[in-house]
Image (cartoon, rainbow, N blue to C red; front, side):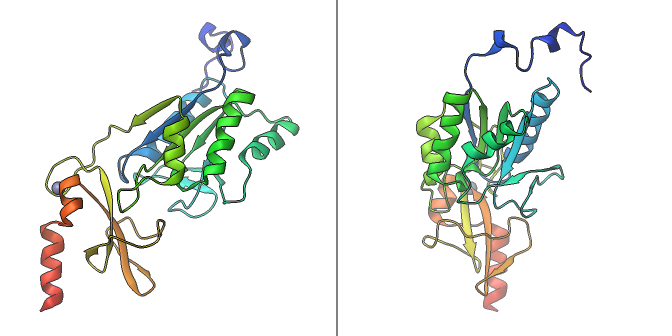
Length: 236
Ligand SMILES: [Zn+2]
């Protein structure tokens, strides 16, 4: 899939000084299941085939540390971002070893620290690295994650991911609900890892999972006919 070197288009791709216009910081956001991680991998592929060298980062990925995975089965090795990782050092250490890093793909960026978002902006501004960040905007209470807020404030471009995910009622699903023991949660820690598929996960002896809802049903806490039927079964 790599273009031949005599392809004029590939000659002006990566690293050509004529194309240097400074890096850019772009934030792609949406609820779970909207295809953010798939888009992240597609972005990486598109840049890599133009001869650019990137680094894929993620945190709290469903596949575990060191891997970015998608619900539709794609995956790639990734740097696991823990809270203490300095992203500027991460890139500069690679440069010191002679490894090119032209861009970063940052999945689950709303779970990074605010300081790490600042570091990403520094990399864009001082080192011409392009940063593509992907993540949730809001938590289960519909409040912005701090890192997402900082991305909204600092990013050159902000895009709502357009792959539509639907609420059970058919309206666009825009918000993530945390469902604890069959009921929508309104308070609790901002980040609780639950299961995001059909099967529930035991967390502190409670079933915790996430469900995408439209704004109306997030506000009323109505999880749909399937959840209501399950609730009635529990009452029997
Ligand atoms: Zn709805």
